[in-house]
Length: 231
Image (tube, rainbow, N blue to C red; front, side):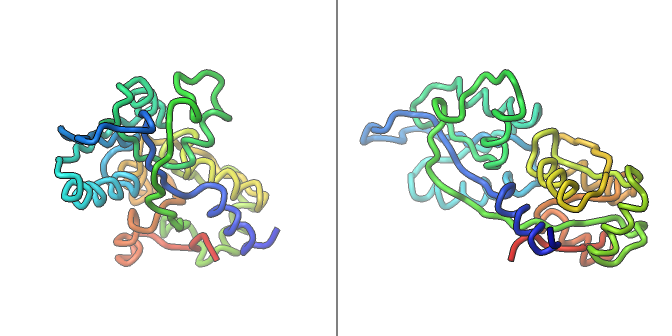
């Protein structure tokens, strides 16, 4: 598989954000008459959280009610998913999440307290996000071809960060490993914030994530960008 095809596969299969909610198909005409909560399954600072917050202000103006962002990270998104699935189905509790959590968790985990089809109805696609392969400057490579060659020569030596087991960054990196026949060591985190800090410190060397999360560090020379997913 060529490098170009690998990057296309990564973006098509793993990256994107959807906003979903559970509720009746028909809502009373006086809806909403109180604040609406958008639950986010990751800590503040990542693309999903930023997208939800960017949405909240114009949405609040349109509907005439305030929007509350509720970060409920952990358990690969399942804490937030379970909370929303068990909430009252009245349209006042929404979920902004990676499509990867919604599609992958039911396949990766045996027992879930929520059903992706019965408990949620997708209502909007917020963002389709490209991702950047970022590395610590201590890794002696300057492009993707050199990185793959170095990783093959040093199997398991390089650590990669993810936003948690089953997250977009986890699944995406696993696909990248299989497609390029390399072996990296997985270090899961509860969100992108701490993951980025450890990549900056050199405790982990690789992070596949959305550009806004690391752009400043790349421009400042604290991280190196090897490639961006997409066409």
